Length: 248
Image 1 (tube, rainbow, N blue to C red):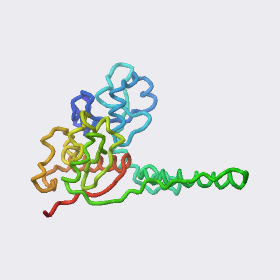
Image 2 (cartoon, helix red, strand yellow; image 1 turned 90 degrees about the vertical axis):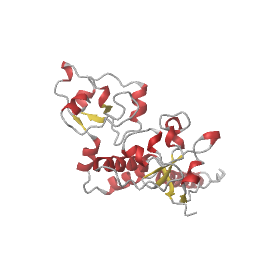
Image 3 (cartoon, rainbow, N blue to C red; image 1 turned 120 degrees about the vertical axis):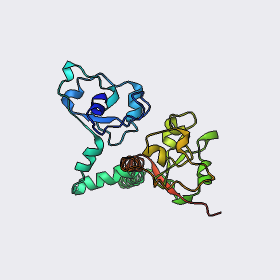
């Protein structure tokens, strides 16, 4: 990471190597990846939050150079993502749909289960048909910031967050976004400004008495950072609604 910064390479490092973020995520070429020491638990936790994660992903701040790594080649995921925006095959299209929308996995699972159940009934007519339960229906709705604030993970409640105008259910990541978590300040709030600036301070969150943050003062690189975070949340968590200004 220090080498990248010294050579004006656009590699983030918001936490300055303290293993509190994943903004210095890089993809290491396989022949060099095997020469690195195994990532510790803290690094693995941060990599789970990284955009464009691969099997050879590492945090740049944890790659310590020595003679054996001379000539190492790494890629920045954001750049790789731009290169890969090409026409995809039908199989790639369906794989992308499954990876980007968790609901598709639920529907696929139900379809496979029904198919297997019908096959089983036809083959063994004496077996009972298992009653299928419909997956939980998600109603897309509008949230005011006051309504969103209620879902902060306290007292067993779910955890919702707003990113770039969309509201996501991040309850599955409660170890990060729940009370006491590294990103706990964002629970039940609009996290857009903090994610754009790669800052997790309370100052990044507007008061409920102020209008919704329009983010008009963001720099170009901060807007790109927010877009990458938004894509990450679309892929990893369930979109449940939109942030809405309370006219009252």
